[in-house]
Length: 606
Image (cartoon, rainbow, N blue to C red; front, side):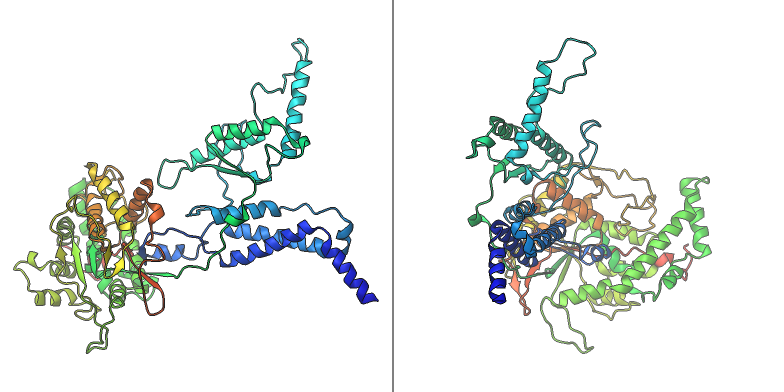
């Protein structure tokens, strides 16, 4: 008998509050979907092995998704606790935030990609008196009863105003002089926030979409009707806000699909080299044995007294006897070189290039037990080559760095070197064996800038290529279409990111700074020209200049090309592990500056 009573009580408990049981089931289903949810995030096909990318990896894919998940969990726990209580049968329905959370999740599923943030708050910088706090709005929570209560309050002010006297001591009226309410204020605040937070890299404000799931301008119950609700909606639309009413149709809400196969970025068989990577390829940091500790790195690049004295005398000649920025500049540059050496110790540049290129086309093991590299070609622009040689062959490059520079371009040696002689000269004294990377000869593009008619091909090596190549080429052409200007930076002031072409402690009196583009002073003309060549040939551009990469990405976003970063899940070729291989447009590594002359054991400059 007791079992029958218990079963009866359970049935009664389950039959009570059917709407809450439905909400609980819906929230449980959403949490299951969120565990599989993988938003479409348009990421540029950039192979980034720099130190900064390691810090950025592991960040939440869409800011706010975790907060939404936690809010749903919390609401579900409250619901389950209420429904599990036998006393809930006789209690009124629990007030829950579930309808709002469900509506937000539906908008996440239906929003066009990419989703950049969920539940993000924006600063409302309206003058004090209008708003002086961070604005956070929950439009789906607005319903007819709330609006009707607000209208009644507004009407009471109007009544008080009509009964007022002419007494000058009477307080000012709160009656409206024009139609307004809290929802219209919310709309203005959203438009203001949109204007103050344009789309990244552009001056274009985002479109404001307002979905009011619980507001009905024509309700069935006449007690919930007020023509001012419809007037409010029309006013919002006239302001430029996209207002949508009612719940989403369950039939149009997509199911959470299984995550698409992961993409593996790989370089092309032809590699485009910019100035920064040419310098890195001859740097003492790249070829010398890396330091085993930070103390060893600091000691290695502690310039000897002879170097400091030479530098002081030279600055006195070039900049006047009163110049007093020598010691600080040398110390700062020495610390930067020590940092680069420690980064090299963690992941060697030439070793990484060898490993990634060998993975493209598996090659047999050679006599030394190493996998040979496939037939790779390295290219650069005439301007990058000329500037590279001017930098390295000045007093800036050390003897071994100068020898390697001439080996990369053997025709510029005196007398010219054969390929055999250039190979021997480049690898002499390196910690890598001769021929470890098929660098030589570095091939030359026919001009500093490609012809305007040259367009990127559609595919390479049997693999469809990302539309990002096209967007990159267009951005470079737009930047180069504007005139170049002298670099406005003060001589010797490093980039805020510590990211240069690798010239390092070069005196601009010897090697003047390269001309920069008027479109963006962060971009030198020769860098944009190098990247343009890689884009139109659809070859991977290898660079150590992350600052320029960021600046170019901003130019692409400004033109609205950021929604076509990747090639898409159907493109590319699968490797043995089932991953899709996609060609990298850019390959970013840490900089390696010319460092031989700054070593503590270096011979004093002449």
